[in-house]
Image 1: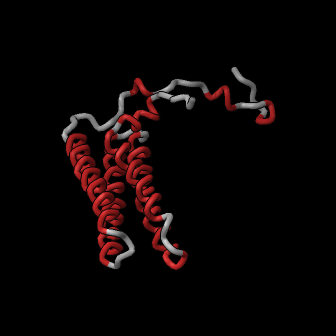
Image 2: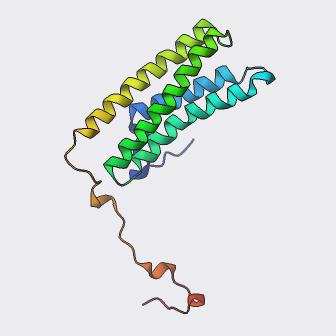
Image 3: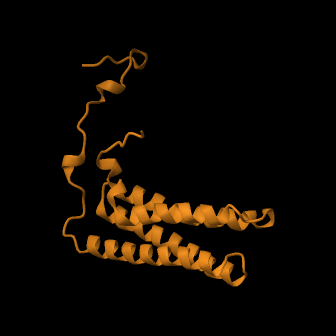
Length: 153
């Protein structure tokens, strides 16, 4: 059984947009891993753009400021746009079946709208910083060593 590790830095896992981004990556891998060798660059670029979506959602969530969070969500939207554009082209070029395209495009559409709504709701917030209660107070004593010529106070 896999142990679920919880904490403020992993709260992004509760976000519907992160869950959808994860699902889109998994679906993209299932479809694109079958691409022939001559399309390996296409496969690699598509996976990278989709991979960027969930990564930016989580990185933004873990940032300290609301402004940085929104910035990362907008980067995720940009990566999603890149991915959606590619899906359209690949379906037209018959690299994807209509069914594969529809399944991935529908999930990308849902994710796009979810990200836009999340950005809008965050922009309406009055505060621009995360709560200081999330910070861990610690001393620099832990980082000093005898080799530094310093001893903990």
